[in-house]
Length: 355
Image (tube, rainbow, N blue to C red; front, side, top):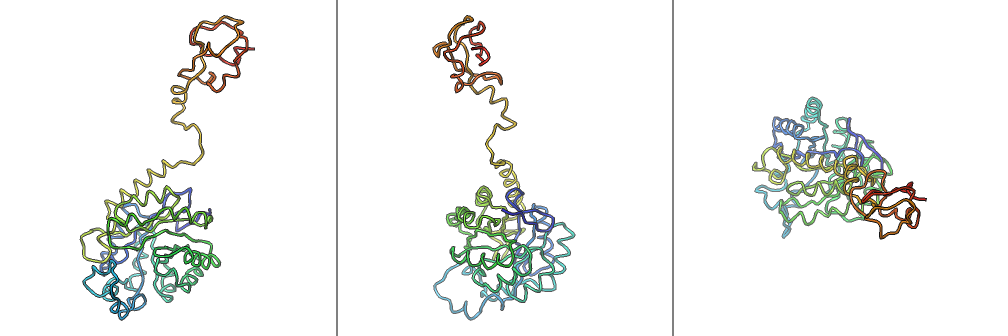
């Protein structure tokens, strides 16, 4: 698997997990709030502050949503029309340069998801990575356009099947090999039962199918259990929604992480990364003493005179096992051989003690 770089951060299986705080619509139409959330994201341990660039007319059909019947989703909780909510949630294009400059000042990467072909061009100069949301995975035109920008691409794969994922990945990497592929579940209802549908083991399928691509998780469940599971399975990019107050009115506040829960998530992940180790089985530095005091060695279970032929009935296998002692698995080295010296009760027997 290759290593990618976003700004000054390396991303890959041997590097710390990269955290993207998706501020999304949680700025609530206020530039001051957007800046505040950037500051809080940085303080909480995020590597990138992400927004979503769209205008309502480039992402949803007002007529189409008004005609929908009997389809329940997180949007059924909204008190306004879907079109109105997207209008209020859109990022003012005049903010882009301001937000980028502020992120640079704070020391956090500016990132966004562009939701039109035109917006891809508009935001390109301000980002080093571009996120493709799950809803656009079958819009191959935008996948290709983003790939041509030669930035790091991040594709979320919620509500999609494997053939759709394969198609998007193949079209992207034909143009640009710098890709992060994220498992995702796009149920935004905040239902605690959604944890049952995160399906982290898809990451195993992705690893087998796309061995050279860095994996990640875009997550919308409460807490960080799914994040820890994903990291243990090899994900090295994590995206979750971010707010300062889960009680604020808005489409994404109630299920988002806040500064306290975000920091706990990052700290727990760093602890997990330390625990994962290098994957090579060996006696670790902190257990060299344990290897002595907990392992058994071969010892004489009686006084033995020089010239005695060693039989198994003369031996005990007991702790500790000094570095120069034989282990029980080494008994063939001394059985039926003649002692070259006298041994006292529970002396260790070395291979050099027999001939």
